[in-house]
Length: 441
Image (cartoon, rainbow, N blue to C red):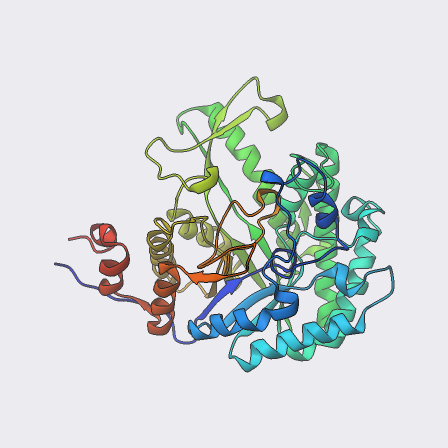
């Protein structure tokens, strides 16, 4: 019987990722809270409510993360708390964030701080938010205040989480607030968010020269359903350019490309010290002449795919390795800033975790500098338009009571982290069916 242990580099960052609105609770002053109160916006009428109660008691979950042996945690700052009215910053809120960051450091958890993760102050939303170019200067003002007051606790900054997802879900598909379906608006929003990233990058470095500043990008593969079909390949390429390539053309090459038009964006060139990868799944794309609203594309999945809970897509761990290889073209350090699956009964997550981390181990053998892995997420949280119906947590949480119960995958992740390796014993204990796949004869 073949045996092999897959070791990760010394000092590798093992963490979990979170976002303020999804875990803090009672973020009543942002556009998401207002959206949740409207009938039909959130699946099953769910609301975030107290969420995971982090605003009052994040430290209890910090303790849980530390007990797992983690050495990193990604969290975000809630702009609507920090600046509840334009130009008025709440010092008590900033002190609470300082307390949280200090608490992470005391537990040996290095913070990665995201400055925008989908939520806007209501006052900003009422002014058009990211469709308004003036938001760029508002964002820089907010970022400067955060860095001035919290920069002694943070070195690793993520300016904006998934600007491509925000733009598409909010302004093309209409599933996020403000619920628009306008291709031109989608393009404008994505451009403004990337301009804001570039301006924030430079502002952070002015204030904190040693800072490491990046962007978290959701890279989703669009593979042609029939690789021999020219039309399938064409529509897959169009979707890939709009969702993936346009962002990196801007922030790395300094060039606006489709769907944002053509032209220079020199101020954005090389505004990354590292790049963050949020990877979950992929789509197969078929040409559909009747699907004008989706650029003549129809999304499907491989016929033999293992499907994830909640219609979330297919389990495709090979995509993590493909995505890292693609990002490595920029020759920048890489962080896996999000990766996980929704799985209430934990019957898929242990295998999914092992498969994805094995793909990560493979890429590390090529000396590609992946610095860390942040699992999404520690505790079940409020999953935006899906409400509480997509449980991503290593730890189960009842949103009504806040009671937490670790899932078997939490024990698996703990064992991997503490050993800094995947071992045959872990495969046999948590996913024996994977032995021939990961340890072939």
